[in-house]
Image 1 (cartoon, rainbow, N blue to C red):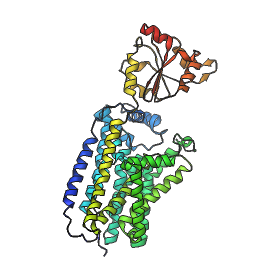
Image 2 (cartoon, rainbow, N blue to C red; image 1 turned 120 degrees about the vertical axis):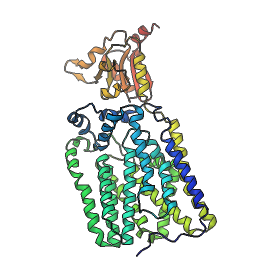
Image 3 (cartoon, one colour; image 1 turned 90 degrees about the horizontal axis):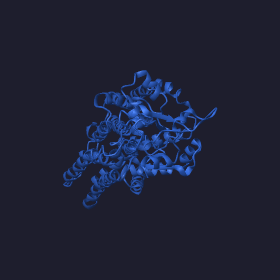
Image 4 (cartoon, rainbow, N blue to C red; image 1 turned 45 degrees about the vertical axis):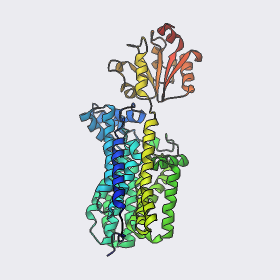
Length: 499
Protein backbone atom coordinates (compact mmCIF):
# COMPACT_ATOMS: atom_id res chain seq x y z
CA UNK A 1 0.00 0.00 0.00
CA UNK A 2 1.42 3.38 -0.99
CA UNK A 3 1.70 5.92 1.87
CA UNK A 4 -0.50 8.99 1.49
CA UNK A 5 2.24 11.45 2.43
CA UNK A 6 6.02 11.46 2.90
CA UNK A 7 7.30 11.36 6.46
CA UNK A 8 7.35 14.72 8.17
CA UNK A 9 10.77 16.20 9.01
CA UNK A 10 11.84 17.06 12.49
CA UNK A 11 11.85 20.54 13.79
CA UNK A 12 8.81 22.23 12.25
CA UNK A 13 8.82 24.97 14.83
CA UNK A 14 7.74 27.63 12.36
CA UNK A 15 4.63 25.78 11.19
CA UNK A 16 2.40 27.05 13.99
CA UNK A 17 3.46 30.64 13.40
CA UNK A 18 2.95 30.25 9.66
CA UNK A 19 -0.55 28.88 10.18
CA UNK A 20 -1.34 31.78 12.51
CA UNK A 21 -0.21 34.27 9.85
CA UNK A 22 -2.27 32.47 7.21
CA UNK A 23 -5.29 32.52 9.50
CA UNK A 24 -4.96 36.30 9.89
CA UNK A 25 -4.67 36.71 6.12
CA UNK A 26 -7.79 34.63 5.59
CA UNK A 27 -9.70 36.72 8.14
CA UNK A 28 -8.57 39.96 6.46
CA UNK A 29 -9.51 38.63 3.04
CA UNK A 30 -12.95 37.61 4.31
CA UNK A 31 -13.51 41.10 5.72
CA UNK A 32 -12.29 42.69 2.48
CA UNK A 33 -15.05 40.90 0.58
CA UNK A 34 -17.61 43.00 2.49
CA UNK A 35 -15.72 46.30 2.32
CA UNK A 36 -17.76 49.00 0.56
CA UNK A 37 -19.78 46.28 -1.16
CA UNK A 38 -22.59 48.70 -2.01
CA UNK A 39 -20.42 51.74 -2.61
CA UNK A 40 -20.61 51.66 -6.39
CA UNK A 41 -23.60 51.15 -8.61
CA UNK A 42 -24.27 47.89 -10.38
CA UNK A 43 -22.54 47.80 -13.74
CA UNK A 44 -23.90 46.44 -17.00
CA UNK A 45 -23.41 42.71 -16.37
CA UNK A 46 -24.78 43.02 -12.85
CA UNK A 47 -27.84 44.87 -14.14
CA UNK A 48 -28.27 41.98 -16.56
CA UNK A 49 -28.32 39.64 -13.56
CA UNK A 50 -30.86 41.86 -11.79
CA UNK A 51 -33.16 41.92 -14.82
CA UNK A 52 -32.73 38.23 -15.64
CA UNK A 53 -33.55 37.13 -12.11
CA UNK A 54 -36.67 39.28 -11.63
CA UNK A 55 -39.07 37.07 -9.65
CA UNK A 56 -42.03 39.12 -10.86
CA UNK A 57 -41.81 37.47 -14.29
CA UNK A 58 -43.88 34.36 -14.92
CA UNK A 59 -41.67 31.30 -15.35
CA UNK A 60 -42.46 30.91 -19.05
CA UNK A 61 -41.86 34.61 -19.75
CA UNK A 62 -38.61 34.49 -17.78
CA UNK A 63 -37.40 31.48 -19.75
CA UNK A 64 -38.40 32.87 -23.14
CA UNK A 65 -37.21 36.47 -22.72
CA UNK A 66 -34.09 36.13 -20.60
CA UNK A 67 -32.75 32.55 -20.57
CA UNK A 68 -33.09 30.85 -23.94
CA UNK A 69 -31.31 33.62 -25.85
CA UNK A 70 -28.50 33.96 -23.31
CA UNK A 71 -25.19 32.17 -23.82
CA UNK A 72 -25.04 30.93 -20.23
CA UNK A 73 -26.84 28.01 -18.59
CA UNK A 74 -29.71 28.92 -16.25
CA UNK A 75 -28.81 27.67 -12.76
CA UNK A 76 -27.09 30.77 -11.37
CA UNK A 77 -29.85 33.07 -12.63
CA UNK A 78 -32.49 30.71 -11.26
CA UNK A 79 -30.79 30.76 -7.85
CA UNK A 80 -30.66 34.57 -8.00
CA UNK A 81 -34.34 34.64 -8.95
CA UNK A 82 -35.16 32.73 -5.77
CA UNK A 83 -32.77 34.89 -3.75
CA UNK A 84 -34.31 38.11 -5.07
CA UNK A 85 -37.77 36.89 -4.16
CA UNK A 86 -36.82 36.61 -0.50
CA UNK A 87 -34.10 39.23 -0.06
CA UNK A 88 -34.92 41.88 -2.65
CA UNK A 89 -33.03 43.43 -5.55
CA UNK A 90 -30.83 45.96 -3.74
CA UNK A 91 -27.18 46.28 -4.68
CA UNK A 92 -25.87 44.61 -1.52
CA UNK A 93 -28.53 41.91 -1.66
CA UNK A 94 -27.67 40.99 -5.24
CA UNK A 95 -23.94 40.85 -4.46
CA UNK A 96 -24.22 38.95 -1.18
CA UNK A 97 -24.54 35.46 -2.77
CA UNK A 98 -21.20 36.04 -4.51
CA UNK A 99 -19.64 36.85 -1.13
CA UNK A 100 -21.00 33.59 0.26
CA UNK A 101 -19.77 31.60 -2.75
CA UNK A 102 -16.35 33.24 -2.41
CA UNK A 103 -16.18 32.26 1.26
CA UNK A 104 -17.18 28.76 0.19
CA UNK A 105 -14.25 28.84 -2.25
CA UNK A 106 -11.94 29.33 0.74
CA UNK A 107 -13.79 26.62 2.63
CA UNK A 108 -13.15 23.95 0.01
CA UNK A 109 -9.47 23.81 0.99
CA UNK A 110 -10.37 23.27 4.64
CA UNK A 111 -13.49 21.13 4.40
CA UNK A 112 -13.03 18.71 1.49
CA UNK A 113 -11.53 15.59 3.08
CA UNK A 114 -8.71 13.46 1.80
CA UNK A 115 -6.94 15.70 -0.69
CA UNK A 116 -3.99 16.11 1.70
CA UNK A 117 -2.86 14.91 5.10
CA UNK A 118 -0.83 18.05 5.75
CA UNK A 119 -2.54 20.73 7.91
CA UNK A 120 0.00 23.29 6.70
CA UNK A 121 -0.89 22.58 3.07
CA UNK A 122 -4.59 23.01 3.85
CA UNK A 123 -3.98 26.36 5.50
CA UNK A 124 -1.64 27.48 2.75
CA UNK A 125 -4.12 26.66 -0.03
CA UNK A 126 -6.96 28.28 1.94
CA UNK A 127 -4.81 31.40 2.30
CA UNK A 128 -4.13 31.52 -1.42
CA UNK A 129 -7.81 30.99 -2.20
CA UNK A 130 -8.75 33.72 0.27
CA UNK A 131 -6.37 36.36 -1.04
CA UNK A 132 -6.38 35.82 -4.79
CA UNK A 133 -7.74 38.97 -6.47
CA UNK A 134 -10.02 36.82 -8.62
CA UNK A 135 -11.99 35.66 -5.60
CA UNK A 136 -12.03 39.02 -3.82
CA UNK A 137 -13.10 41.02 -6.88
CA UNK A 138 -15.83 38.65 -8.06
CA UNK A 139 -17.11 38.35 -4.49
CA UNK A 140 -18.36 41.92 -4.97
CA UNK A 141 -20.12 41.39 -8.28
CA UNK A 142 -23.55 39.89 -8.89
CA UNK A 143 -22.21 37.46 -11.44
CA UNK A 144 -21.60 33.72 -11.71
CA UNK A 145 -17.80 33.69 -11.35
CA UNK A 146 -17.55 33.36 -7.56
CA UNK A 147 -19.78 30.29 -7.81
CA UNK A 148 -17.73 28.91 -10.71
CA UNK A 149 -14.50 29.34 -8.72
CA UNK A 150 -15.96 27.53 -5.71
CA UNK A 151 -17.23 24.62 -7.81
CA UNK A 152 -13.98 24.35 -9.78
CA UNK A 153 -11.96 24.19 -6.57
CA UNK A 154 -14.30 21.59 -5.08
CA UNK A 155 -14.05 19.45 -8.24
CA UNK A 156 -10.25 19.56 -8.42
CA UNK A 157 -9.74 18.83 -4.71
CA UNK A 158 -12.28 15.99 -4.80
CA UNK A 159 -10.45 14.56 -7.81
CA UNK A 160 -7.13 14.59 -5.95
CA UNK A 161 -8.82 12.99 -2.93
CA UNK A 162 -10.22 10.22 -5.17
CA UNK A 163 -6.79 9.63 -6.72
CA UNK A 164 -5.23 9.39 -3.25
CA UNK A 165 -7.85 6.82 -2.31
CA UNK A 166 -6.91 4.84 -5.40
CA UNK A 167 -3.27 4.99 -4.24
CA UNK A 168 -4.30 3.74 -0.81
CA UNK A 169 -6.62 0.99 -2.09
CA UNK A 170 -9.70 2.60 -0.54
CA UNK A 171 -13.28 2.73 -1.94
CA UNK A 172 -14.03 5.61 -4.31
CA UNK A 173 -17.75 5.28 -5.09
CA UNK A 174 -19.03 7.99 -2.72
CA UNK A 175 -16.44 10.65 -3.58
CA UNK A 176 -16.94 9.90 -7.29
CA UNK A 177 -20.69 10.47 -6.91
CA UNK A 178 -19.97 13.68 -4.99
CA UNK A 179 -17.65 14.81 -7.80
CA UNK A 180 -20.34 14.00 -10.37
CA UNK A 181 -22.82 16.17 -8.45
CA UNK A 182 -20.38 19.08 -8.18
CA UNK A 183 -19.62 18.92 -11.90
CA UNK A 184 -23.33 18.81 -12.76
CA UNK A 185 -23.97 21.97 -10.75
CA UNK A 186 -20.94 23.62 -12.39
CA UNK A 187 -22.19 22.69 -15.87
CA UNK A 188 -25.61 24.19 -15.25
CA UNK A 189 -23.98 27.32 -13.80
CA UNK A 190 -21.48 28.09 -16.57
CA UNK A 191 -20.55 26.24 -19.74
CA UNK A 192 -16.89 26.21 -18.73
CA UNK A 193 -18.05 23.95 -15.91
CA UNK A 194 -18.18 21.23 -18.58
CA UNK A 195 -14.46 21.80 -19.19
CA UNK A 196 -13.83 21.37 -15.46
CA UNK A 197 -15.72 18.07 -15.54
CA UNK A 198 -13.87 16.91 -18.64
CA UNK A 199 -10.50 17.76 -17.13
CA UNK A 200 -11.17 16.15 -13.74
CA UNK A 201 -12.76 12.90 -14.92
CA UNK A 202 -10.22 12.47 -17.75
CA UNK A 203 -7.39 12.97 -15.26
CA UNK A 204 -8.90 10.37 -12.92
CA UNK A 205 -9.36 7.97 -15.82
CA UNK A 206 -5.71 8.31 -16.77
CA UNK A 207 -4.62 7.88 -13.16
CA UNK A 208 -6.70 4.73 -12.78
CA UNK A 209 -5.16 3.31 -15.96
CA UNK A 210 -1.72 3.83 -14.45
CA UNK A 211 -2.42 2.76 -10.87
CA UNK A 212 -5.48 0.52 -10.65
CA UNK A 213 -7.63 -0.33 -13.67
CA UNK A 214 -10.29 -1.96 -11.50
CA UNK A 215 -11.45 1.58 -10.59
CA UNK A 216 -12.15 2.58 -14.18
CA UNK A 217 -15.77 1.46 -14.09
CA UNK A 218 -16.68 3.67 -11.12
CA UNK A 219 -14.92 6.69 -12.61
CA UNK A 220 -16.42 6.28 -16.09
CA UNK A 221 -19.95 5.73 -14.80
CA UNK A 222 -19.75 8.78 -12.51
CA UNK A 223 -18.35 10.95 -15.29
CA UNK A 224 -20.98 9.73 -17.74
CA UNK A 225 -23.73 10.62 -15.27
CA UNK A 226 -22.51 14.21 -15.07
CA UNK A 227 -22.45 14.42 -18.87
CA UNK A 228 -25.73 12.65 -19.62
CA UNK A 229 -27.73 14.69 -17.10
CA UNK A 230 -26.42 17.87 -18.69
CA UNK A 231 -26.71 16.82 -22.34
CA UNK A 232 -30.50 17.37 -22.73
CA UNK A 233 -30.21 21.02 -21.70
CA UNK A 234 -27.13 21.50 -23.88
CA UNK A 235 -28.92 20.21 -26.98
CA UNK A 236 -32.09 22.17 -26.21
CA UNK A 237 -30.26 25.43 -25.51
CA UNK A 238 -27.87 25.16 -28.48
CA UNK A 239 -30.84 25.37 -30.84
CA UNK A 240 -31.72 28.81 -29.40
CA UNK A 241 -28.22 30.32 -29.59
CA UNK A 242 -27.06 28.97 -32.94
CA UNK A 243 -26.57 32.48 -34.29
CA UNK A 244 -24.10 33.19 -31.46
CA UNK A 245 -22.08 30.02 -32.05
CA UNK A 246 -21.24 30.63 -35.69
CA UNK A 247 -17.95 32.35 -34.97
CA UNK A 248 -19.39 35.88 -34.79
CA UNK A 249 -19.51 36.39 -31.05
CA UNK A 250 -19.17 39.46 -28.86
CA UNK A 251 -15.94 38.07 -27.39
CA UNK A 252 -12.79 38.53 -29.44
CA UNK A 253 -10.09 35.99 -28.70
CA UNK A 254 -6.96 37.71 -27.45
CA UNK A 255 -4.90 35.03 -25.73
CA UNK A 256 -2.00 37.29 -24.78
CA UNK A 257 -4.22 39.84 -23.10
CA UNK A 258 -6.52 37.25 -21.52
CA UNK A 259 -3.67 35.20 -20.07
CA UNK A 260 -2.01 38.36 -18.73
CA UNK A 261 -5.24 39.54 -17.13
CA UNK A 262 -5.95 36.06 -15.73
CA UNK A 263 -2.45 36.02 -14.20
CA UNK A 264 -3.13 39.41 -12.66
CA UNK A 265 -6.40 38.12 -11.24
CA UNK A 266 -4.62 35.05 -9.88
CA UNK A 267 -1.77 36.57 -7.86
CA UNK A 268 -1.80 40.29 -8.62
CA UNK A 269 1.36 40.35 -10.76
CA UNK A 270 1.64 38.58 -14.15
CA UNK A 271 5.42 38.21 -13.72
CA UNK A 272 4.98 36.45 -10.38
CA UNK A 273 2.47 34.08 -11.95
CA UNK A 274 4.92 33.31 -14.76
CA UNK A 275 7.71 32.60 -12.25
CA UNK A 276 5.44 30.24 -10.34
CA UNK A 277 4.52 28.38 -13.54
CA UNK A 278 8.20 28.06 -14.48
CA UNK A 279 9.08 26.77 -11.00
CA UNK A 280 6.36 24.11 -11.21
CA UNK A 281 7.59 22.93 -14.62
CA UNK A 282 11.22 22.82 -13.43
CA UNK A 283 10.22 20.82 -10.36
CA UNK A 284 8.48 18.19 -12.46
CA UNK A 285 11.37 18.13 -14.94
CA UNK A 286 13.79 17.49 -12.07
CA UNK A 287 11.60 14.84 -10.45
CA UNK A 288 9.32 13.39 -13.19
CA UNK A 289 8.28 10.62 -10.83
CA UNK A 290 6.12 13.18 -9.02
CA UNK A 291 3.79 13.15 -12.02
CA UNK A 292 2.78 9.63 -11.06
CA UNK A 293 1.49 10.79 -7.67
CA UNK A 294 -2.10 11.88 -7.10
CA UNK A 295 -1.24 15.47 -6.14
CA UNK A 296 0.87 15.85 -9.28
CA UNK A 297 -0.86 13.86 -12.00
CA UNK A 298 -4.46 14.96 -11.41
CA UNK A 299 -4.00 18.77 -11.28
CA UNK A 300 -1.46 18.78 -14.15
CA UNK A 301 -3.65 16.72 -16.48
CA UNK A 302 -6.85 18.52 -15.46
CA UNK A 303 -5.29 21.94 -16.01
CA UNK A 304 -3.84 20.92 -19.40
CA UNK A 305 -7.14 19.49 -20.60
CA UNK A 306 -9.18 22.50 -19.43
CA UNK A 307 -6.83 24.86 -21.24
CA UNK A 308 -6.69 22.67 -24.33
CA UNK A 309 -10.47 22.35 -24.41
CA UNK A 310 -10.89 26.12 -24.22
CA UNK A 311 -8.41 26.51 -27.07
CA UNK A 312 -10.26 24.03 -29.28
CA UNK A 313 -13.63 25.70 -28.65
CA UNK A 314 -12.14 29.13 -29.35
CA UNK A 315 -11.10 27.98 -32.84
CA UNK A 316 -14.82 27.91 -33.71
CA UNK A 317 -16.42 30.38 -31.30
CA UNK A 318 -14.41 33.04 -29.42
CA UNK A 319 -14.75 32.22 -25.71
CA UNK A 320 -11.42 33.25 -24.21
CA UNK A 321 -11.66 35.88 -21.50
CA UNK A 322 -9.71 36.31 -18.29
CA UNK A 323 -12.78 35.45 -16.21
CA UNK A 324 -13.50 32.25 -18.13
CA UNK A 325 -9.90 31.15 -17.62
CA UNK A 326 -10.36 31.34 -13.85
CA UNK A 327 -11.23 27.63 -13.89
CA UNK A 328 -7.47 27.08 -14.25
CA UNK A 329 -6.74 28.79 -10.95
CA UNK A 330 -7.58 25.92 -8.49
CA UNK A 331 -5.34 23.28 -10.13
CA UNK A 332 -2.57 25.84 -10.65
CA UNK A 333 -2.67 26.94 -7.01
CA UNK A 334 -2.78 23.32 -5.87
CA UNK A 335 0.40 22.52 -7.81
CA UNK A 336 2.18 25.60 -6.46
CA UNK A 337 1.16 24.93 -2.87
CA UNK A 338 2.21 21.27 -3.16
CA UNK A 339 5.62 22.32 -4.45
CA UNK A 340 6.13 24.82 -1.61
CA UNK A 341 5.09 22.28 1.02
CA UNK A 342 7.43 19.63 -0.36
CA UNK A 343 10.32 22.10 -0.39
CA UNK A 344 9.48 22.98 3.19
CA UNK A 345 9.72 19.33 4.15
CA UNK A 346 12.96 18.37 2.37
CA UNK A 347 15.11 21.50 2.47
CA UNK A 348 17.50 22.27 5.36
CA UNK A 349 16.57 24.83 8.03
CA UNK A 350 17.20 28.22 6.40
CA UNK A 351 15.89 27.21 3.00
CA UNK A 352 12.89 25.56 4.62
CA UNK A 353 12.05 28.87 6.28
CA UNK A 354 12.47 30.62 2.92
CA UNK A 355 9.94 28.23 1.34
CA UNK A 356 7.43 29.12 4.05
CA UNK A 357 8.07 32.84 3.52
CA UNK A 358 7.47 32.48 -0.22
CA UNK A 359 4.26 30.57 0.46
CA UNK A 360 2.98 33.38 2.68
CA UNK A 361 4.26 36.17 0.43
CA UNK A 362 2.04 35.11 -2.47
CA UNK A 363 -1.28 35.67 -0.62
CA UNK A 364 0.10 38.87 0.92
CA UNK A 365 0.79 40.23 -2.58
CA UNK A 366 -2.61 39.03 -3.76
CA UNK A 367 -4.38 40.65 -0.85
CA UNK A 368 -2.61 43.94 -1.50
CA UNK A 369 -3.51 43.80 -5.20
CA UNK A 370 -7.13 43.03 -4.30
CA UNK A 371 -7.39 45.99 -1.93
CA UNK A 372 -5.74 48.32 -4.45
CA UNK A 373 -8.09 47.30 -7.24
CA UNK A 374 -11.22 47.57 -5.11
CA UNK A 375 -10.21 51.06 -3.97
CA UNK A 376 -9.20 52.32 -7.42
CA UNK A 377 -11.65 50.64 -9.80
CA UNK A 378 -14.63 52.68 -11.00
CA UNK A 379 -17.53 50.68 -12.36
CA UNK A 380 -20.07 51.89 -14.89
CA UNK A 381 -21.92 54.73 -13.23
CA UNK A 382 -25.53 53.79 -13.83
CA UNK A 383 -26.59 55.25 -10.50
CA UNK A 384 -24.89 58.58 -11.19
CA UNK A 385 -26.19 58.70 -14.77
CA UNK A 386 -29.75 58.13 -13.55
CA UNK A 387 -29.31 60.95 -11.02
CA UNK A 388 -28.25 63.28 -13.85
CA UNK A 389 -31.26 62.28 -15.93
CA UNK A 390 -33.77 62.80 -13.15
CA UNK A 391 -32.12 66.09 -12.20
CA UNK A 392 -32.54 67.68 -15.62
CA UNK A 393 -35.01 70.61 -15.58
CA UNK A 394 -38.34 70.12 -17.30
CA UNK A 395 -38.01 66.34 -17.63
CA UNK A 396 -40.44 65.23 -14.94
CA UNK A 397 -43.05 63.79 -17.31
CA UNK A 398 -41.07 63.82 -20.55
CA UNK A 399 -40.35 60.81 -22.68
CA UNK A 400 -37.07 59.27 -21.57
CA UNK A 401 -35.47 57.73 -24.66
CA UNK A 402 -32.81 55.08 -24.00
CA UNK A 403 -30.50 53.34 -26.42
CA UNK A 404 -29.12 49.84 -26.99
CA UNK A 405 -29.95 48.01 -23.75
CA UNK A 406 -33.28 46.75 -22.33
CA UNK A 407 -35.38 49.30 -20.49
CA UNK A 408 -35.09 47.21 -17.31
CA UNK A 409 -31.42 48.23 -17.01
CA UNK A 410 -32.22 51.95 -17.05
CA UNK A 411 -35.23 51.51 -14.81
CA UNK A 412 -33.19 50.00 -11.96
CA UNK A 413 -31.92 53.36 -10.70
CA UNK A 414 -34.88 55.52 -11.70
CA UNK A 415 -37.65 56.53 -9.29
CA UNK A 416 -40.77 54.39 -9.87
CA UNK A 417 -42.69 57.42 -11.23
CA UNK A 418 -40.13 57.93 -14.00
CA UNK A 419 -39.95 54.35 -15.22
CA UNK A 420 -43.14 54.38 -17.35
CA UNK A 421 -41.63 57.17 -19.49
CA UNK A 422 -38.75 55.00 -20.75
CA UNK A 423 -38.75 54.55 -24.51
CA UNK A 424 -36.22 52.31 -26.27
CA UNK A 425 -34.95 53.78 -29.53
CA UNK A 426 -32.72 52.70 -32.40
CA UNK A 427 -30.97 54.43 -35.26
CA UNK A 428 -32.67 52.35 -37.93
CA UNK A 429 -34.43 54.12 -40.80
CA UNK A 430 -38.04 53.20 -41.50
CA UNK A 431 -39.79 52.99 -44.87
CA UNK A 432 -40.65 56.72 -44.77
CA UNK A 433 -37.37 58.02 -43.41
CA UNK A 434 -36.85 58.40 -39.68
CA UNK A 435 -38.08 55.49 -37.58
CA UNK A 436 -41.29 56.34 -35.73
CA UNK A 437 -39.60 55.61 -32.41
CA UNK A 438 -37.59 58.78 -32.89
CA UNK A 439 -40.51 61.06 -33.71
CA UNK A 440 -41.33 62.13 -30.12
CA UNK A 441 -37.74 63.20 -29.62
CA UNK A 442 -38.01 66.15 -32.02
CA UNK A 443 -40.20 68.15 -29.66
CA UNK A 444 -39.94 67.20 -26.02
CA UNK A 445 -40.81 70.50 -24.44
CA UNK A 446 -38.30 72.10 -22.14
CA UNK A 447 -36.60 68.78 -21.30
CA UNK A 448 -33.12 68.93 -22.79
CA UNK A 449 -32.58 65.18 -22.83
CA UNK A 450 -32.38 63.55 -26.24
CA UNK A 451 -31.08 60.09 -25.37
CA UNK A 452 -29.47 58.19 -22.50
CA UNK A 453 -26.99 55.66 -23.89
CA UNK A 454 -25.98 53.30 -21.12
CA UNK A 455 -22.53 51.66 -21.25
CA UNK A 456 -21.84 53.37 -24.58
CA UNK A 457 -18.98 55.72 -25.31
CA UNK A 458 -17.51 57.44 -28.34
CA UNK A 459 -18.28 60.31 -30.62
CA UNK A 460 -19.59 58.07 -33.41
CA UNK A 461 -22.91 57.62 -31.61
CA UNK A 462 -23.26 61.36 -31.15
CA UNK A 463 -22.81 61.93 -34.86
CA UNK A 464 -25.32 59.21 -35.72
CA UNK A 465 -27.91 60.71 -33.40
CA UNK A 466 -27.41 64.19 -34.87
CA UNK A 467 -27.73 62.84 -38.39
CA UNK A 468 -30.80 60.76 -37.58
CA UNK A 469 -32.56 63.75 -35.99
CA UNK A 470 -31.44 66.18 -38.69
CA UNK A 471 -29.76 68.65 -36.35
CA UNK A 472 -26.18 70.00 -36.50
CA UNK A 473 -23.56 68.03 -34.60
CA UNK A 474 -22.40 71.12 -32.70
CA UNK A 475 -25.84 71.44 -31.09
CA UNK A 476 -25.40 68.13 -29.29
CA UNK A 477 -23.98 68.29 -25.78
CA UNK A 478 -22.54 65.07 -24.31
CA UNK A 479 -22.66 64.68 -20.54
CA UNK A 480 -20.40 61.76 -19.67
CA UNK A 481 -20.28 59.39 -16.76
CA UNK A 482 -18.16 56.26 -16.88
CA UNK A 483 -19.62 53.99 -19.52
CA UNK A 484 -22.46 56.37 -20.36
CA UNK A 485 -23.37 59.22 -22.68
CA UNK A 486 -26.25 61.57 -22.00
CA UNK A 487 -26.89 63.27 -25.35
CA UNK A 488 -28.48 66.72 -25.00
CA UNK A 489 -29.71 69.27 -27.54
CA UNK A 490 -27.65 72.45 -26.97
CA UNK A 491 -30.51 74.87 -27.71
CA UNK A 492 -32.97 73.16 -25.39
CA UNK A 493 -30.33 72.84 -22.70
CA UNK A 494 -29.64 76.61 -22.79
CA UNK A 495 -33.34 77.47 -22.77
CA UNK A 496 -34.13 75.11 -19.92
CA UNK A 497 -31.23 76.30 -17.77
CA UNK A 498 -31.86 79.98 -18.46
CA UNK A 499 -28.26 80.59 -19.55
